[in-house]
Each structure stands twice: as C-alpha cells, then as structure tokens.
Length: 287
Image 1 (spheres, rainbow, N blue to C red):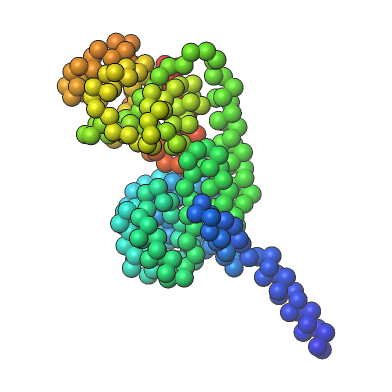
Image 2 (image 1 turned 135 degrees about the vertical axis):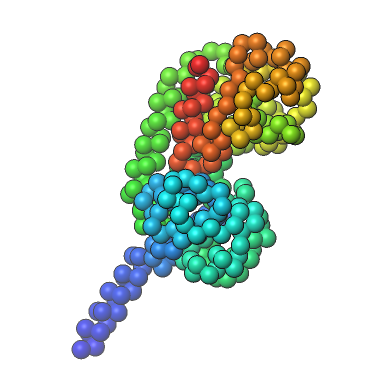
C-alpha cells in the first residue's frame, strides 16, 4: 500500500514538474507559472495581437483601450490606457498572468502589479528578432508553443523573401514622421528603424542619439531625404503638408512625389503584423 502511495506521489511530482512553465523575460526576470495561463490581462496592443494570433484569444480577459485588433479584442474587458491602466479593474479580473511592454507601460504601475503576487511578464522587442522571441515566449506561457513556432516560421519566411529581392547599390534616404507638432521622427534602435533598412531604405535620422528625436523644420530641409513617410494618424492627406510647411516644397521627396502615409498600427506595434508593415514599407520604397 505504501509503495502505491509513494508511486502516486512520484507521478504527481513528475506531472507537476512537466506542466510548470519557466522563462526569462526582457527585464531578465524569471517568470514561473504552474501551468499555461488561462486568464491573461494584456497591457499592450502588440501583446493582444500576438495572443490572438497564436490562438490564445480565449484566455484574454482584459485589454487596454487601444487594443483594437483583431476585432475580437474589442469585446474584451477594458482596463484603461497603456500608460494609465486601472489597477483595481485588472485585479478584479483575477488574472493568472499580466503581460506588458515597458515601451509604453509606466514603471510605477509595473511595481504595483508585481506587488500583488500575480506573475507579470515583460516583453520589449526592439527588432524583428525580438518580436519573434516575444511571440515564442507568449506561446510558451499559454501552452501554444507549436502554434507560435509556426507563426514565427511564417513571419521569418516573409521577411526573408523581402531581404532576398533588395537590390544592392545606393539606397534612398527615408524620414519617417511619428508627429508633426512637434516634429518627431524615427531615430535609431527601434524595430521601425530596422525595417527601413530591411525594406531597402536608409534612415535619414539614423545618426540621431535618441530613438525618436525631435527635429526642427529647418533640420528636415537640411537632411533633404529622398522619401517622406508619415504615420496614418499624423497626416490625413499628404497635400496638407504644403499648408503646414510651405518651404518643404524644396525637398527632394516633394519634387519626386515620394510622400506617403502608412498604417500606424502595423509599423508601430512590435507584434505579428510588423511583417505586414515591412511589406508595406517595401512597396512604398519601390513605388
């Protein structure tokens, strides 16, 4: 009888060890779950998109006000904004995992959330490789490792196909605007900056010391890029640019009619649709 009980205990311990999940997040913290997460609060649109893309949408119980893709995400309980989430609402949802990105989330909120003893996973990808890792990690945490792996394989294949067709030689200089009042452009060390290069362009603000530097209108003139690209939520109509900055008609991009808009969501969210953004950016540069 004792042998049987001992055997059952061994099996129980073995099963527990097998089902336990452990990984290191982007803050170099060990995250351990006793089993795949079943109730997740996502505090970043890119995380929400990833969770739905890997088939873990049913496990999502809370999202931010900005989580608008896919459409199913809009049906989830709202927990406030990225920088001002409602902590009480989050806790009331009884999550077994909270996932956030320090790129947008506030450190003070991070500290509050960790104080409740709920596992908090932090992902902060800054390039495509980091996005792939983030997808795989969320797959592990939700028990969707195989699905996440297939998704990453597909995304990597699509990105590699663009790399393969980039024509070597002189690249067009590209300036990407994330704001016009004030003028803020894409600098260095962001996944968007990497995508500009992968799409066949050269970031006109690559020598800037910051990720999203503020430019003067004169600095844009001095840079004189070949292509101007505006986030879709920054400029409704490229024709309005002349009204805002009439002197920019001297720019090479204006004279060559290479002023474009791009969907902000697919190029500003480090999630599975980033490759859609890469493809769209490549199409603009070969326009």
